[in-house]
Image (cartoon, rainbow, N blue to C red):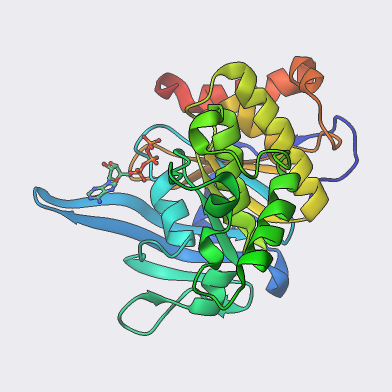
Length: 292
Ligand SMILES: Nc1ncnc2c1ncn2[C@@H]1O[C@H](COP(=O)(O)OP(=O)(O)OP(=O)(O)O)[C@@H](O)[C@H]1O
């Protein structure tokens, strides 16, 4: 997790990061890593031929760390995140969730225990409009031996965590886009995963709502100690939220750079006006070149 060293940040150079990417994980967190990615790559078999989406990639994420994946469109960010979530299997390499391999055996079925440690938030909230907020949040608990009262209580707890404690009995259509995405976050947390994987969760929101959601997510992360891996196109969002920004190169993606961000927590929006924040954004923007 981030240190309290106000305003001090370190940036790895492109050259050193590339050599890290080639010779081992960007950060070795030891055997206690929350996520250990070793040489995972992905080639899709499309009708027009194979598509090499991600070159063999190494990455370790420490428990409680906030890692942001940033890169140009089509570089494989979603592919990497979906593999971490067990939604698609890698064509090479291994993924460890805690001390368990995510994929075991030959049929690439994700391990149930490892999956239980993961929550996933997509760009679209994907709520069921005919269900009240609490029943959307509680959906993952249905059929798992819980009573209706238990589900409502857990949903209420999660709703409070995302600032929706007063909206349990509302329907999604009565909520703003940001509020709907909060419901999706609460739903992803209801089975108490230790790791939250988020794919452009705020990409569809207006700038002001996005700022508010960034603050809410940071607070939620500070309160819960979850490990978070978040994909974004926004360099500012990446630097604001991350302990570490992992920059992927153009397709086929590979780790191009790793930037440590050590601004004190909790960060408020004023940090974005600090010179060093601007330097970090500029450093990442330069590497993204014409792709941003
Ligand atoms: N199911 C699929 N079949 C074939 N190719 C795919 C499939 N899914 C993704 N791809 C290709 O793999 C590459 C990486 O896609 P991916 O969605 O992971 O990139 P991304 O960095 O998340 O992009 P964006 O930022 O635009 O969402 C792209 O060239 C994409 O067209």
